[in-house]
Length: 236
Image (tube, rainbow, N blue to C red):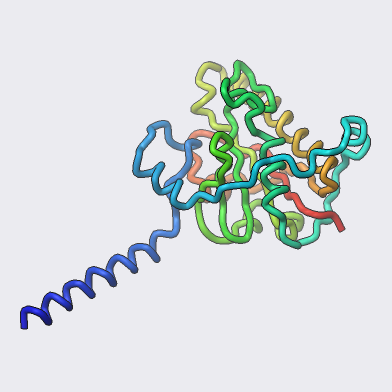
């Protein structure tokens, strides 16, 4: 009888653990909403992280070619986006070109580095961790269609959402000044996305007509704003 009871207890605990793992589909929000470095949150993120290949693919064009080819392309094919291109795209948008100094490829007002770049694809939503060159899972599931009513986001295999984290901009006492610099810094990132797409022969469009409230809810944004979104893929 004791052996039967022990076996039933073990099976109950295993079933409960499996249910908890299945139910826990949402990872705690990123640094866009938290300032504490909770070790348990970090360990969950790294467990759900996807390491990217080293950036470099798609950067072979000259500056003249890139500037000549930069343009908006709204017709995007739904075919899969290679991780090698995604790595180069994210590095071009917001990577560190001087990692030892933690300096990025784009400038920011008083070096606030206030932006977080989120990647929306079929599998889920990820935060780009530039220092580790990984994608950290934020929430599972396909949320691309929730970014905007525009059809580009349903068709494009990948969309980048640029979120200004106001917790990193507390040095600006006036909201109007803060918002101005956030908009300027967002423009730098957006242009780098365009330039990489021109180099790699990809299609993209900068979209400001996005569902901010919905995006904030998905990402758990408390003190920030989704400024722009870029669907990216191969042009039709």
